[in-house]
Length: 99
Image (cartoon, rainbow, N blue to C red; front, side, top):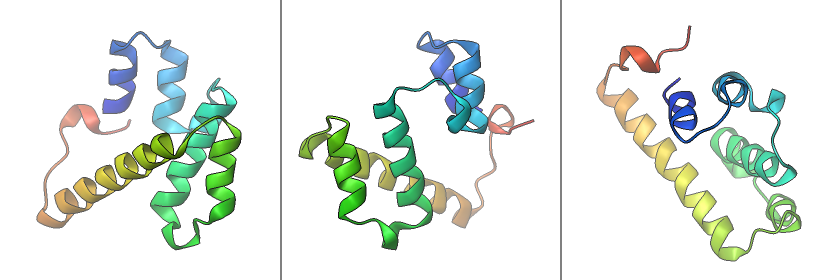
């Protein structure tokens, strides 16, 4: 939910923010945004299965090596921080919890 609030603060429509919080595949995203989300999900859940075809899909949407590297590093960083927080038992803020 925190990310949905961040999207709203940046001027995103409520519908986009809701879909982003629950299922980005239902959101009205551009092909480029959807490719980035698909890649982030795969990198998060199936990192060992990321291969050249995943990189090629991002390149097909106009991302260059620097943008792809940025995406990998942002996804990796958030995964790292989440795992550290989970590992040490950090409680979620109430507003972060989904309903």
